[in-house]
Image (cartoon, rainbow, N blue to C red):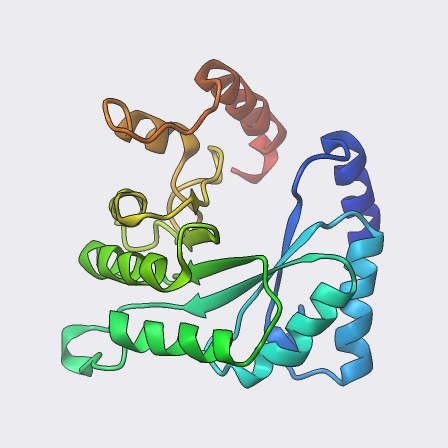
Length: 229
């Protein structure tokens, strides 16, 4: 029961924690387009059961799929994090569309559509966008959005460059990147919290975490997950 799980998570995390879920625009949590009443009900139920932010994306950057779904998320009292989907293509596939300029066009379309939002995320589900493009994309997005909007970069370690992407994003002005705890971090999951913490030592960016508690939590998590690894 997914809602029993989110209720329990909220109880353990407390009332102040920002618990986030992911939605696929008009597909909500499925792979097929849903009718308007289901899109609305999705937002209302996630609000009822402890979620506070929904990250809302369309894999093909069709902004039309984010308008109604984003409005439902906002109307339900949730924070709406609107997404621009990013990725890199192999050299022999051209890849001309996957440029910072294309991503800025998509972001501008989202802003012009009047979608209510509380933050903006550039989401690389494949973990392949080159760090150079990450830097330029986040730099241009920061300029377009100004300094008040929470700007997020999300990726995976699928191609082994997640840490380099995150360093580039933070240098370019991102406020937030998404990490994971071992043993599920890395690979097709996110960069490990401790890895990023170490990489940022000596820079102007701090994660504001107690690394000893993080390492302890990872040991507990590893013990909980031992039957799956």
